[in-house]
Length: 297
Ligand SMILES: Cc1cc2nc3c(=O)[nH]c(=O)nc-3n(C[C@H](O)[C@H](O)[C@H](O)COP(=O)(O)OP(=O)(O)OC[C@H]3O[C@@H](n4cnc5c(N)ncnc54)[C@H](O)[C@@H]3O)c2cc1C
Image (cartoon, rainbow, N blue to C red; front, side, top):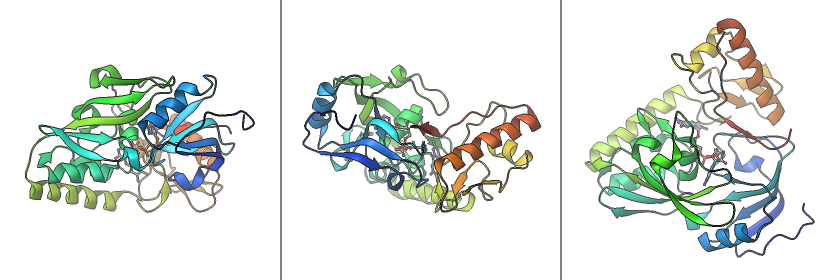
């Protein structure tokens, strides 16, 4: 497809763009095309004029993603600065660009005296990823604070979707296939900046103690099955520290997989599948991947 002429853009369009440097696992192949739109109009025009048969996917910080070693066919869209602003738009409500980080959202909320968004401080992703994944931590979840979001569909049209339209369940939304979140409105409650900051600090410290935050990882690997904790099932199946190639089940938190240095995505995904097999043998429970796996093997 690299011989196909793509629509001209104002932003940056890169063929055969390595994705490993852009994702937390630091592994995997290239995007056939990487598109970093200049602004919303650029993104809409590009999608409108792009051959509808070309697949498109959004990439945030790649903190919940295995990009397979054969790379991602079609266009990967990465939202930059133009989509990273966070501003107060109504009472206790923030308008957040989909490229904004959780830290920016929670610290802007603090400055605007809005509590209830502290949990986003600890999730290392973008607003687009949070909305898509129903990100949550420390008792908070996107579905509880989201009012609505703006999405650009595969044909370039812009729509506002209410939280109800996303039919959220645990770490899952029914975001329409190929839709790219470009902005979201989050609402909290009145709060005092000092108390909000104290809660953000508490969350950050608790994270530090329990998760391998400075590693090449993808966050929680498996969803918690009803009535179980995934990390406990993995531990009971004897998988703590298990390795495959350059990949390892974290000793610190058994629901995290690590790239020890030179793991391929096949090592990481293969290790995850081996863990699922062992957990099924030991406990009868089938673990479901939380990490999104994309591209060709
Ligand atoms: C150390 C660590 C700790 C973590 N802790 C938590 C936690 O406590 N709670 C939690 O919920 N998650 C956690 N995660 C996982 C991850 O941070 C979240 O899933 C986050 O929402 C992913 O955001 P992202 O922008 O990096 O998305 P990516 O990983 O880049 O993508 C994830 C999915 O979202 C889609 N996506 C991304 N941006 C958009 C967009 N603009 N429009 C449409 N779809 C989009 C992608 O196509 C993909 O399907 C953790 C990850 C790490 C590495």
